[in-house]
Length: 417
Image 1 (cartoon, rainbow, N blue to C red):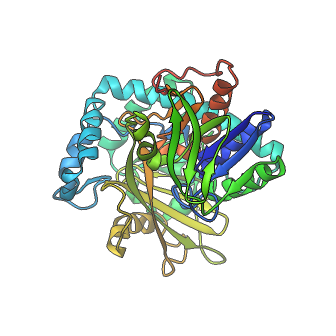
Image 2: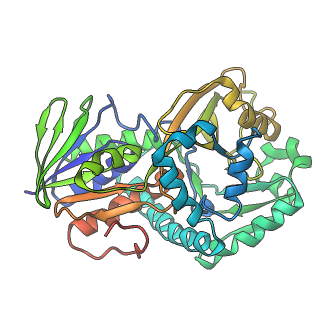
Image 3: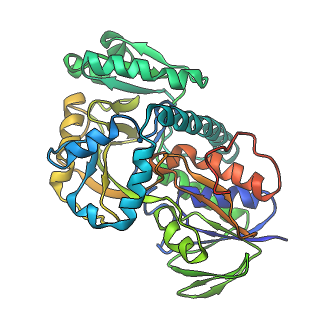
């Protein structure tokens, strides 16, 4: 029996373990934290959103980043202290190279292929395993507050429509008809793009539930176990040294998100993955409140929102500040203001639950999946803000690659070699 060691128990690592175990492998998952999904997968936006597969590297991104140095409230946020980080400078040059209209279109198209495929795989797993993770399958709505931005949004959506995604341009009256919870914000909405096939669900609940299914298939999880280095001889990995000792297997998968480059660099790899800080705040709902049933994004403020059972969450901001996870309440003021304006009675806003996480972002916005120059080492990392959406598809194609099968989708631009 083939033995496989998966490094990382976020949504990417756990879905990878699930698919690999389904092939009959003996799988062991190593995680430095005490449970699955305690970092980037813990309190993210929760949107399963092929309809928002646009890459962040766009022609407008450089201007937004420059404005963020002097103005608060920008969706992309660059701090002056970040200029002292050599990793960011190298990554940033590659990011800027992808900010052309041509590259933005290409990268978005590639992301869309994986996102749509991944959603299909998610549906199959959910049905097969009977998973409960506060899934809402009523579509997602991308709101615009003024006519110029609405016009830009409808023009940009051609990229996704050309990729086969069904999208509907709707006026403010249709917005409120679809989502009555937005009635109080009617005057702030110029229109929206509605993607009926998009969904929302709690990535952490999904990961926890899937981890239990993995255990039933014989997958072993070693928590509170920190990976220190990967040992190798020539072009073959021979083991992984942890703070609990040496672990060995026939195959190894790095699914460590932002930490992947740190572990891979001593092996000779310079993975273009940088941590991009995101913020979320979650409020309780219940009787007397009117949370939305359809999640979405306030496009002018780039604030995502979604309801998970009796919770309403807002997420925003892409901050380039390395591995720093510190925050103050002020960091959440902009997204809370946007959310309360859209849903004045959406939740109990006196009880915020703040969280920050680090998205593993590549300059192109596309992940890195598959083989390395070491014959038994594989990658599944760099999914950025779309890790939840891309997780099941990424795990499936990686499993196909490791089994010697041709993946069902084109992975051009999403591999290391």
